Length: 453
Image (cartoon, rainbow, N blue to C red; front, top):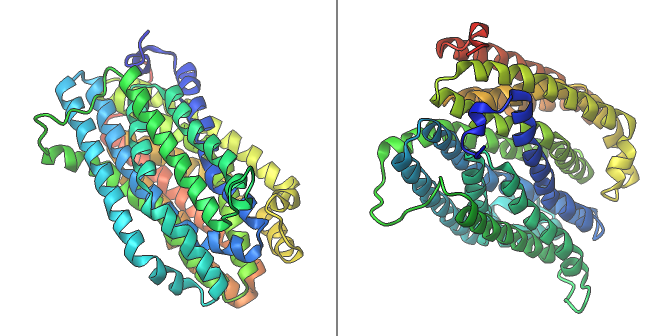
């Protein structure tokens, strides 16, 4: 059975495991980039950890543009492969590569011109600001590895090859893991570069991942090929990529907006609150990666099934993947409830951070099952070519409801009550995603009656 047709023939439970497990593992490993940076940077001091936390929204924004564009390409490729349109597949892949290079150039220019302006918006502390500028400048100037690796990993995923996509991500993360302590603390003859070393290790890991992804596509992916010769931009292809990709970019960027907004609220209480929230967000991202892996696996499966006119496969997928995601969310909730202090102490948490963070982790974790449903439904609708469900569901749970509620609760009752805002925002996002997905499936003629198709 080749990788291009297993999405149409493999039993759905087996297909979900086959495609999502490598994605789960690869996303878990990918999230180690920032986790590892924070763990080692925390040993420099809490101010250094705060600096990395302040820089994180810009890193998320770069990831948002690269992932959003590649998700649009992935969804379109899967439909094209399902419909067996070879020439269209080549054009879509080439367009995706061009868009990745364009994104890389944009952030390189922003890195050269805007890092100081961003830092001044969020802190007046000279030490924190200097560390934040150093870290952010290097990550933005050499961001090409992120854009190239993300796109070529999606090329592999579009034909069902999530294993080689995982290999690409793991190679970069392992490189970063090895280089971080060497470059930060000056081991094996390397000078101690401090926070600069953390940034350099990160970008080297990203470029290693990019090189491996390109090589694996060249050697092991005969279906999706980039062809520059005779290539012309097709406006229809661009429109269809960003019909899914632009809402996904906005969706991913909402994490950056939320972090920046919440940091601005929390900094008025203490820098420790900012450091804690950065740690929480990275912990949550790390533990949520299995759900994101399930969701990302759903995109090519839904796209292929829709392109091949197999609506019953989509119904079967949702019945398989939603209970799995909710079960994972419950496990994560139990972890956050049971061991919040050890989780925070991984990042050398101070007594002040533990005082803020232990009750906060327990309060927030109650909402994880709601977040799981919103994530899975959003990704699944992206596979149908509708990225708006994912965008608005995320907007509700991360910005539109969350940020005003955090501001209101913290001002009225104190920062210790700010975390109850998650209860309201996650419930709102889940309700919207369920209603909007039901409408989209009905519009496309996909109902429980198709289950045998």
